[in-house]
Length: 326
Image 1 (cartoon, helix red, strand yellow):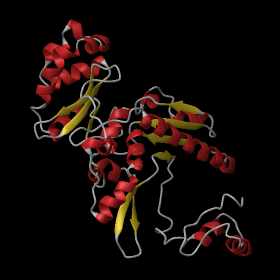
Image 2 (tube, rainbow, N blue to C red; image 1 turned 90 degrees about the horizontal axis):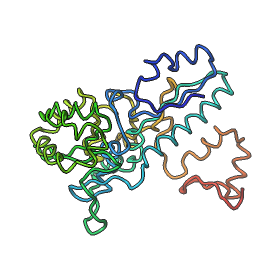
Image 3 (tube, rainbow, N blue to C red; image 1 turned 180 degrees about the horizontal axis):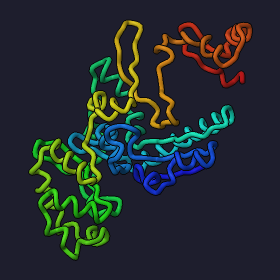
Image 4 (spheres, rainbow, N blue to C red; image 1 turned 45 degrees about the vertical axis):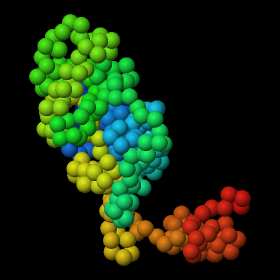
């Protein structure tokens, strides 16, 4: 078993990636926690808070114009938990086939998966959830956090918001260069994160003003090219047509009985080359009870008994297991 949360491609560059490992031991299982799964964004550096912004979570958690991160690093924890699910599936698969798996779990896709209820509302009801009512929560600080000198939301010229995170000196020098603030990158009092965190009031206004000279799409392109961690603040409605999710096949199209279609996010973990698919259409309440139980190995007579004893609920009621009878 090999676990890693290095940046995308790091193990491959070191020559110890999954292909190398599986050549030595075909039963080996790799589990990687990445910023993104396969797709256009997979090489971007990424962090928990960026995922909360870009995945829509911060938008619906925060106040109007003031997206908020969760108070705990829930995306890091969630992505790791989905990775464990992938490991368990890989262990079962190895028991059946003798082969290992290359498992990946994504921070961005984890956040999007949590937005699945909003996907349905946006597409079928035209109802896009907004931020919280200002009376329901207190405002959060726009300043730096997590011990980093630059780790916050900025406003762009086109009145959009973007979260920028500087966690290395390379990020700092690249950000200063693309914003035209080279004097900051050579300032000896700002040449480490510890110094930037202490002295952030000296430079943060310059960064804020510099970011306001760019429209969001242009700034995102520059940050992407410079390999500086960033995330736009997305609403749930923005995620339906999000390029990375669609090109990377991380959304599934679901067709209702009336012919309408909508998209839902897949689980935020990949297992080798396996692809997720919609095997059954969304059911009426209890519609697939017998089909599901049959697939699990129950015989028709056994299913009849389960229905007769109300161990499973069918017809107009949802499939459920009666916890008092098992």
